[in-house]
Image 1 (spheres, helix red, strand yellow):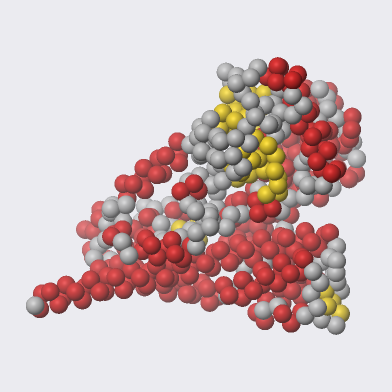
Image 2 (cartoon, helix red, strand yellow):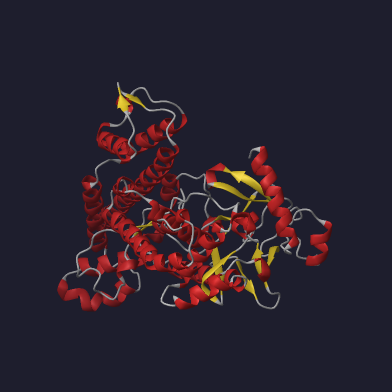
Length: 509
């Protein structure tokens, strides 16, 4: 953080203190604001976490799980209501456009407030907001195609189309408000809607939620993530659990249900509390002094994190990979969105149950249906058939994608090199990804002469490079899940086959 950013942060924290925001909830809010120049310093402080996307909050002392660590009074929350209450023109115009969604209204209000410049009461807070986001709505056609997986590409195209539609619907309101031209463009709309999507928190009186100064410094942790070691290798974790009796799933079913129930009881670690008229944040875990303090926004896959927040996680226990399924596989009482491969390569409970029943002979399905829906193995032969089907389909998907896992790993290294220093050898790019590099040049109107890349890259190209990297990271993670599934299934097949052979030997003996 440079000197200008540091001074801006100090000014912001002092402003926040005057609003009664505090990380020392045991103190009287008014007293705290009078005697402190910063709302932080008792429990938390701002630090920089490059691997987490930028600024975050760090524990300044040991924190206990479920301890109240930050309180933001209602008067400090930015909502459509708070923005229109002091702006009669904005209030009356918003009222005349009741057909707009709550998020569209808040996005327009945010742009109108930005247009006021330094005269805005919220100016100090607005200056702390990011100037750019990497949500799916901001992806170009090139960056969208770089996702490679059809479902991900379709999702991104849908998100972009929805953003354009929302902007066009809101344009009449923005013209009525006479916003400055730069705040009425689609680019400005993408910024405002991404701010609303990525930074708002739930409040009971507005579906759009609220912007919460200081509270929006928390970085994300997935529900249940505390049970995983982010440094641990995915493959080793999978191997540790594969050759156990949980091949049959019946031993783990009850414990899994308990875990789900615990997650459902607490998917977030903050909320508006009416009795104290403030947004309250609680430690989701025990934190040692110096550790980053994280907040759970809810359960999201990596694609959903990209859609709403503009980032994804290397290890996400909520990540899923979907396989194309024949219609009669997901017609057996299981919702289609429950049929997936988990982040660690294991088929979900529903997918495994559905495939067991589908693989069984038609004449036996009614008889074995109860067993399949209970998560029980029907027979060793049936289980092996299911695993072989999964292996074949994972291989088919991997073969259809334009690049391999190994090529994507090399490409990510190449992208990092482009970001850090000039690349003089374009031939370094993996052959299968050469077309992508050409598309990147064309998409960003970069000159490529004599196998050299224009350097330093323009700011627009740098942002595109970051989104391209996100796309490659996402598709790599998808492929790794399929690879892990293949390994898992082969180990199950080997285990069951060896058990079958052992049983035969025992019978002969």
